[in-house]
Length: 350
Ligand code: 9MR
Image 1 (cartoon, helix red, strand yellow):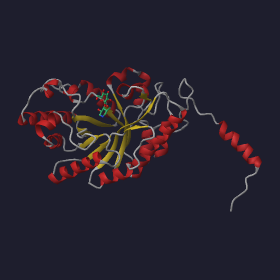
Image 2: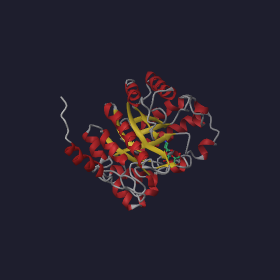
Image 3: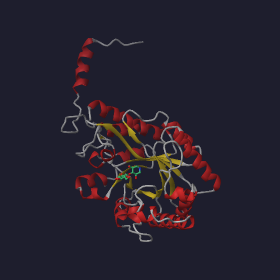
């Protein structure tokens, strides 16, 4: 039975609802977060996830206002080094390992009792010239990959590692690089086995983008996981990078996660951000909020989705404008370190 609503009630409530001011988050007066929740990691853990985390990078650590948010355990329970554990940073010369920058990030995590995600051992990018231009034969490169992965994973023990990063092209074929061109897909086995030998307790992942929805690239990754498992090669998880565009979160995200988990592995959202064509508008920020919520809701619905990492938390340090001119505003905090509606979307998703 419908209850008649008197005109007086409507007159009372409608203007009230309409008059709740959206907190401005920018000098442009755009809407901001209205959430009263203090920390995303606290919300994620209360919802049964292992962590909510963020990437960070060494040059950012001189920004004290930024670091104050980064070091809040309620906000972030996991840290990924955006650059300083990559090959060019950790083994710039053959056999010469440099961990000072990586250690600075690792200590942010481990000194605060937080999780660290190692990123990454083998990737076609950010490689020193000695690797790409060394003209190594298969035996030499095998030993180079073993030494590199074993040493970096062994240095940061007890962690999660993106051992292999971005092995596929968007059409599901393997990326041509020095590793694939010299060793075929066996470079993946070599890297994973070296990582396992260095640390039997590390969680070993393969990480990629454009595998978040079902499709040829996701299928290629599933086939790779199946193949590795059938060969007895250690593989514990697949990372869904999740660099999304406003309004374009794949509708098959949850289904796809479930399909990966059915292979006997876990998944994680490893590099989440949601970019837009600038300038920001209230409508774009609202859609972005919904997009963040959609991603969190999917992970929340799937037990084997263990946690979520955003690819830095503030637009001040996002990689997006540098990579996609004219796009940006991809993070849940704006460039002034003020929470955006996206923050509320994340909270709502758990
Ligand atoms: O955030 C990283 C940026 O600072 C680097 O310039 C860039 C170099 O390729 O790598 C960025 O991080 C990437 C990550 O390592 C792998 N997935 C895509 C990320 C964004 O490019």
